[in-house]
Length: 177
Image (cartoon, rainbow, N blue to C red; front, side):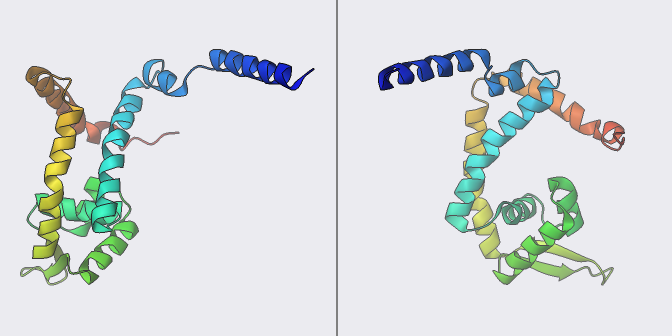
């Protein structure tokens, strides 16, 4: 067999193999009994990836660090445990992130006047600026992501997702055995 014959055979086998092997992404999204979780994760990855890459490039903050900034930007002060609960990041990961943000002067700890053991976290002026600079990009990207939906479809989606979120206490605590 000549070199060109081997190349043609390899190409033919590769094409045959590709035809026999379904596209994994297509399979995960459209032929999956857990279609909701697969599609939801696919969308979240396509949203979070580019935005957190931008955050890293422009601020040199890690994802957990920016999650703290974003959370505190939405609320006027919060407890670390509440940020952990809302973000899904482990407490030790957020503790490191919070310590770095405090060292950078982006977040400050304030002792609760009613309970000296409790410390709330707040953005400094510099931390607030990072949040305010980033928020329009997050909003714009979400608008782009939702652009294929009509306003009525967006409202329906918001309602349905809220329904699922509000029901999480009924299913997330159940242990898998």
